[in-house]
Amino acid sequence: MGRKNPLWFALFATAAVLYTLFIIRCTFVIGDERGLTLFDDAMISMRYARNLVEHGELTWNVGDARVEGYTNLLWTLWMALLHLLPMSDLHISFAVAVSGAGLLLATGACVLAIARTLAASTAACVAAVSATLFAYGLVYWTLRGMEVGLLACSATAGIALLIRMTNGYARRDLRALLACVVAVLLTRSDSAVFVSGWIVYAGTCLPRVYRRRVVLALVLVTLCTLVGHTLFRWLYYGALLPNTYYLKLEGIPLGTRLYRGACSLLHLLQSGWFAPCVLAAFAFVDREHRRLKLLLAAQVVSCAMYSIYVGGDAWEELAIPNRYLSPALPALFVLAALGCSVVSESRRISRMFVLALCGLAVVQLLELFNPAIIQRSRERMTSAYARRYGSSDSPSQYSCGRRRHGCWRSSS
Image 1 (cartoon, rainbow, N blue to C red):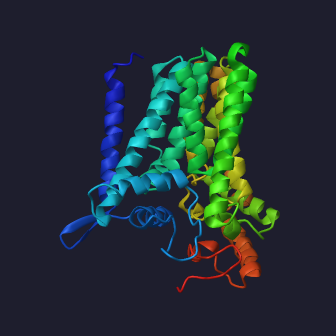
Image 2: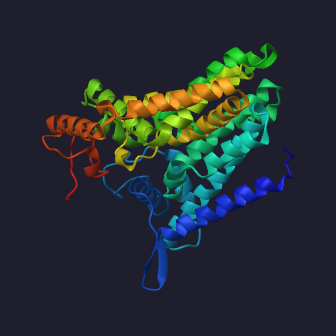
């Protein structure tokens, strides 16, 4: 598994070519110019970024009431930086998509570093890296301009650094880890689910010689970042939480959210994601590196639990991992690759795996996993919104100018 193995160059080059084709396929022509649109939420962040650069206001409408209609501060600031480039508004989206492609490649490199530590074979490394580079959900959200790529890259890099620090302490590794903490928290505040797992791992698994130092640094940086961001939000927008929270969570019964979130996750598993999850479970048959595997599993499980808690995403019918689950896909793929190695090395475990897949195939035929359940869960959420707003419109149909107490709706 030498670092100069041409296999890795070919793999990453292939991914870069496919990312380029993906971006080209999303372009359109207006007059003599070719442009690129991003996902709708990404274009909302782009508007905030443009207003920040052109008018010095991180707002939806310049001169209007300030509303935090984004949840990805760091990614929005990156978009603002891209607006400083000598490019027209029609072409800035290209820079966002290209930077997303770079983040995907960087995520693949982090997965390679993790897999080299945990896997004994080149095949397992190739499987983990390939699954990460070509996972459609992760690729789709990232190249369409969402913050998912930045979050996945920062979270995966954080795990890679923690694994390296398990074998030895270096100040540069600690500084890089703290940078990852700041990045994930400023990208999305709810990414605290990642950082909490890192703190627990550092406090229980790192060598005692420098364990306390690392944990203290992680806790202090986490608190400072969250408190600083919240203070900025309060002073600038007059709210302690993003506007999205008040629109999508406040007033919606917890049971309704959990029901839809669980249904959405089960629907995703039914769409072909049972197999990698089962393989990931088989990775724990091998007791080697068990704590490191638990660190990876914690990242996957925490994202799944959070997705259930908030009621899933608005585009679950796409049958791809949503924006909350996609950042944890690299960790899942590493575990699945390790599980694949375990299955291939033992006939008894191979038979267990086949039986498990057969059992899951039977389970998927049950009415419980009928795709219609997604529609029923959506109707349940819609009725909750209707009771709250006096309309069947979902929060996504409200403009970014809608305040927490319902001052405006969009003219449409």
